[in-house]
Every structure is written in C-alpha cells, then in structure tokens.
Image 1: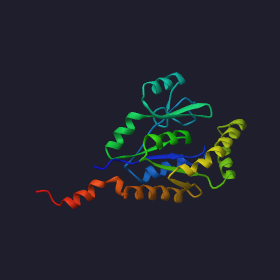
Image 2 (image 1 turned 180 degrees about the vertical axis):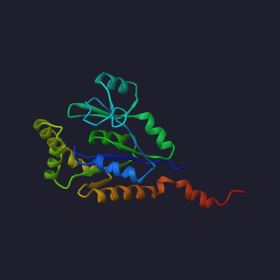
Image 3 (image 1 turned 120 degrees about the vertical axis):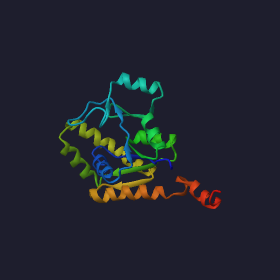
Image 4 (image 1 turned 180 degrees about the horizontal axis):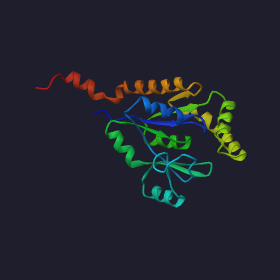
Amino acid sequence: MSRGILLVVSAPSAGGKGTILGELFNRDGNLRMSVSATTRRPREGEEHGKHYYFISREEFRGLIDSGSMLEYAEYVGNLYGTPRGPVEQWLSEGHDVVLEIEVQGGAQIKKLAPDCVSVFITPPSMEVLEKRLRGRGTENEETIRKRLETARRELPQAENYDYVVINDRLEDAVDDMQAILRSEKLRYMRDPDFIKGLLAGPKA
C-alpha cells in the first residue's frame, strides 16, 4: 500500500478554503481532514472536535511541550496547531490527509515533511476578499482591518507553495484541487517500488 499524500492548504481569512475543501471531500472518499487545535473562541455553528479542538492557551502550551503538535503558529492573537497522532496514522493507512492551516504553519510543515504537497488558495482580488469578510457578519471593523492587513502580508508567501489555486468560481477551484492530487499520485517518488517490481518479474 502506498503512503498517503500530506496536502497542506493555506489561504487568507475568507479566502474560501473551507468551502473548496468541503466540496473536495464530497468528491473524494479517501481524504481525511486533520482537526486543528486553537485557542480562539468558536464561531456560530462550529463544534468542538469537528471543526477545531477549542482549548485554553495553557492546554495548548502543554501539547507543545509534550511534542504532540506537528506544527503550530499564532494568528491574530490566537494559537493554532495540528495534533500529530491522527495524521501519522492516516498517512500510514494510505489516506490522503488535508492540513488546513495558516501560512506560518505551512512553512513549518514544509521543513518537517519535505514530501508534502502545498496549495495556496487565493481570492481573485482584494476587493472580493474584503467583501467576503464583511459578508460573514462575525467580525467588527477592527478585526476586518487586521485580517486584510494580514492577508496583504501573507499573499506574497504564495511563491513558497507548490501550487496556487484562484478561488473565483467554486467548481473550477475544486477541479484544480483534484487535478493536483491526481498529478501528485502519478509522480515516480510516490511509488518507486512499482517499477522495481515490474523489473524483478513474477515471483516464483
């Protein structure tokens, strides 16, 4: 069995990665979503253990100290991170695992797992991004301003990712994500033993 692909996905806040990944999961039953831990408060409709593990800053620091976090970063005053155990288990079982994480966390994963596949999802324009942020109705003006400032700092980091997907039309963006996974699965490095087996011939 081939080891699964670790797919790192980042985007500015309100960049649409959650919507895109939701549709991608509807299409691909082999995907698994890593549930991140965070110290921020849950938004309306979010559930503990499903969308995030909502924990205190003290609990988060304890996980870091015990080596139980694959990566972690601070974003707009809150800590976010990826628990290590479930990710390693799913990959070993051949599942492709999605890490939906902030740009800082994505950089950490690239260092820890150079064979991961990283995708940066970007809005078609800053105007569209601001419209989406305001459309949420969950942030005040100060938070929106901070998120837009953060997005302007993060967007140039797209050059450090393997792929960039422009989230203009949802169906096209999901098609692009599927194409990335298909392409990566065909790379020789993902299953070098297959060719070696062909050359070795049938076993006696």
